[in-house]
Length: 81
Image (cartoon, rainbow, N blue to C red):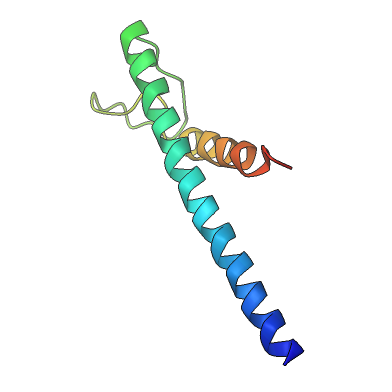
């Protein structure tokens, strides 16, 4: 019986953490969208070796975007610890 209760508890905790991480990733993307808008208004483009020099490229591009997204998610995940 203990094993069953422990397993259910672990699944609930893991499930809640997964939902929290997904929610924080969506929040990070919203933050980056606002940052992109700000950079667009200021006509600032962050240099990146991944760029292909297309006019439609985002102001934050390639690995820089994903690195920032990961950092923001990490901050959001740890904000209450």
